[in-house]
Length: 310
Image 1 (cartoon, helix red, strand yellow):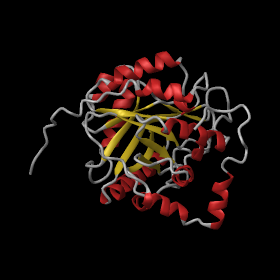
Image 2 (tube, rainbow, N blue to C red):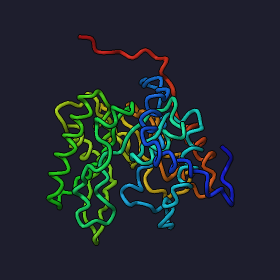
Image 3 (cartoon, one colour):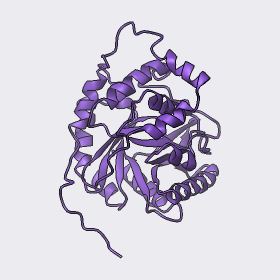
Image 4 (cartoon, rainbow, N blue to C red):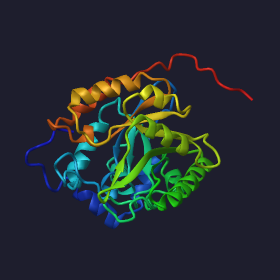
């Protein structure tokens, strides 16, 4: 697709509304007709573009409080990112995934559905992060790879216990269907009416220890972790496959890429799951930002991996 136009056609996605109105079963047909991803291989790092922020009311990118409010613009950016052959897939809420399926944009891609979007940004009970989006059964139906759950652990908020219990049930439900549970844990706290994540290495390590033990099995569990100082210690805290998240873009792109590149070299890191940083780069060159991130990925999959046999 062409790069972004200063005056894009406002009717470019009108056909999606027509399909949804007249033929809603088209979403399921598109999912069944989709060419699947060839499969996950240890050592070939994966690149997943995240687009589930709007479902939690998180529309801001940097100083632009409504950057992700334009759904048509977001779809343009996602399609641009997905055109890069090194982008393996997408992580999104049901509405966005359904649009991408109808557009035929997910052939050969990994699909991760976002499951708990009830902890709305700024909500008085934000930590009580209810499961309001994908279910494990729905993800199985569309041929998804797995589901992602944001798991914020706030020791000063009693809702944390309920959030952890819900996450455990979701992990079990995914594992029963042999789907990946991508768990995104944080140690969080309330600060001046806002939920703030502790990004110190010790806090991330503690969150990993708690999140890794959720559910009755960890066989299908991945970690989705921020890149922080002392990532060597963080990665030593888990044996689970781990993807790195991008977070809120605050530093310059070169600095961000450098930190990602260093973290991607660590054992157990299986790739990137990044959204706003690449979909809304400072220079608005989505294709360029995605290509720069893709160049950091490693592929040592030709190496023989020792496996445990019964």
